[in-house]
Image 1 (cartoon, helix red, strand yellow):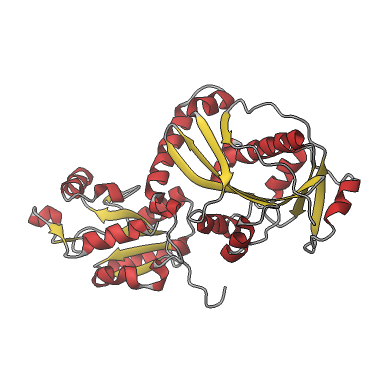
Image 2 (cartoon, one colour):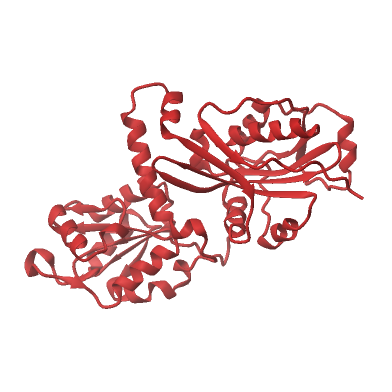
Length: 363
């Protein structure tokens, strides 16, 4: 990690003399500092979430943010009279973000020092730096993706979804049906490739091999008729989950080689991995081919191994393995085999996908 910039995932703003000019309870009428609206909008476009930690009357301060037309940009605001370090900690925990990915900006040195003392990994900034934030490397993700541009909406929908789950008194399966989950599986587009690469890089618990495929490598496979680069998206009645999975499949005459499957950890509880494997097994059965899946055990992907085993993959030897000896094995990788049979549709997720075209014989 030496020399690698850790990108900020969430900026926590103070209000008085930081986001707006003046002190709300003393001055009454306050306005945003010149240029701050543009900073807020630009960080939002980059997929950087934003929140509030302010010592103020909550209702009064939130009403002012709404009147200024920026309230929608802030998730999980903590406006009250407690220590700001508690507010920042609560925001990080609710988002499930590491403290090193949180930034806190405040005009008061004492407030920044209090946050630093209790949360030393949180990066703090003086209010005078606010306009410069978009130009700093830690606020500059390598690429802006479709999902990053709507990240705020996805997190807001997630909070509503979590609240609905907490309130639901029936069995989990019934709750999942009530979500009206839809999974779409299709060929990755040029625009989606950056997000797909990000999934292979960031997803560790649900990555079958832990291998990272670069944007260039994925683009090289898009035009290869022997390969399928599939992106998986999900949505439900609360909104979209965005791109949540990738499947990299090589199609040979007798066997389909599942080189990589990775899914976002945030959809594990919705059964995304099992649903993808169920669909893929059904597709292979339709095509009259076997499946062989690469799996390399890491210190975090036990859940993916369980998903493969539950789907029926095993170390069983089969003559079909000899048909792709050209594919080099990554050290420590197992090749798990499955002779697929037709699968029933999921009872909780509606899958929308085109059938995979038949196997391609390699010259």
